[in-house]
Length: 307
Ligand code: CP
Ligand code: NVA
Image (cartoon, rainbow, N blue to C red; front, side, top):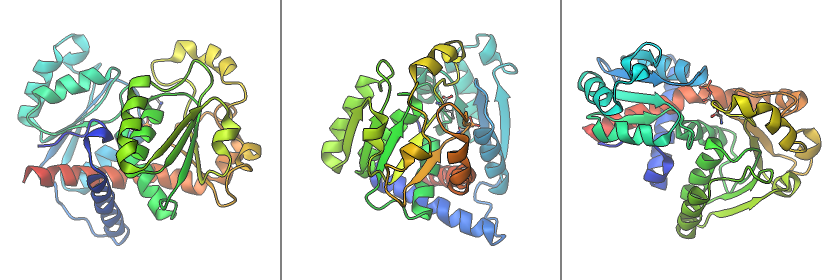
């Protein structure tokens, strides 16, 4: 039985296999074909943070696959009142077939997984957001951006950056990360990625100059400057990230055919300009829609692993 906690635990072939299933499932859906591969299965979804895309895509995805999803916010279940993670894991995994968790500390999800009898999916932690990267890579494939991409990530060294690091390190492409000083990526995660890059041929560069990162890139991406849980730092961060907004002027440095990705929610006028969001709306909202298809692919893949 496999969990999906970070892309670090997956091979390149496995990542590509999940995305292939997702592309197939999307094709079926567009043709009006619903294969009920998870009939009678239930997915428990534990949310300790807000969500629009993750909740809607997992819940809708599970329904379309013939199963059922339970939305469990920490305001409603005893986990939020101090019931231990290990007890919650034992109980929920004795009744449900899969669990998706969105939480703060990555160690919480690791602990949950270690006591769970069913696959656990990371729906975002402070450290990683791997399901987002499945949708991002799927979008790269659809827009033919996946062959030798040069990806520039501009902004905060956060869970999205860490997940891009894992994807680049596994698939072997070039990733340049530009963060302001003091907001660099976690050094342990960077070391992990650099270590894996030796095997995959990935080129990973970290810097503090957004323009240097964007120059001749084929994909430019960013994320909010203040992630969930960092609301109190927002004001200070807006000052510290001065000069890091991705706008059309900076995009001009990238390849002419370059595309802009954003995991959303986007804060226009901060990490991205309104104009750039409009110019790249087609790919950005395909990326968001692909959360549905990618996660259906993932749930089917995890279920098949169990036999
Ligand atoms: N990108 C993403 O995970 O969005 P939500 O926070 O809305 O789920
Ligand atoms: N880094 C952001 C991603 C939101 C999808 C956050 O953790 O809030």
